[in-house]
Amino acid sequence: MSTRAWPGDWRDPAARARLRDALGLPSEPRWLRQVHGTRVLDDADLAEVGAEPEADAAITREPGVVLAVRTADCLPILLAADDGSAIAAVHAGWRGLAAGIVETAVDRLDIDPARLVAWIGPAAGPEAYEVDAVVREAFVSRDAEAATAFRDSRPGHWWCDLPALARRRLAALGVERVSGGDRCTISEADTFYSWRRSADAGRMATLVWIDA
Image (cartoon, rainbow, N blue to C red; front, side, top):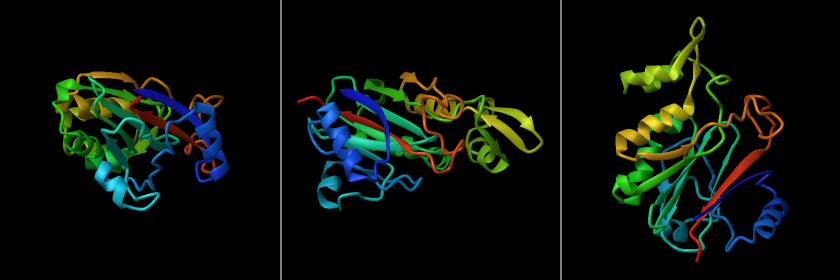
């Protein structure tokens, strides 16, 4: 399995071509039209739907198929079977994470969670991501212990540890081997795009594929 994080405007065909050429990708990435939902596509879905289907995660078992998600504060989460037989790329903003995008992706992989490894990419960090009661309630109403991922900031608002919430969801599923989640798109302005910092910012692309 290979992974890369790369900045750019991924709606631009020229940027996509530069990415493909720079990394020597084995195929054109399977770009998704992300909507903060829980739809997960597999190989059969990707073969049947249009060039950029509406979904927030994709899985493949085919070598050389490049999966891609675009983020600029949301979580990019990559999953892989420890024998390299299957992978998933997940876009998880707070809405998708609360709604169950991680659970759906793990279920669609249909692999013993103990055999999965996960990587959490750069996202809004716990020292910079402030949320309101709606966001906090979306998690705490389902899992009271999720309150540990929220720290008081000002009345009616909290600093949110989004990667910690993702790790809780993964652990509850039995995915114990999790890395990443320690880079902040908001505070690391020289390195990452951030929608919170600038709504017209670009997006990072996180790619994953199985080497042929």
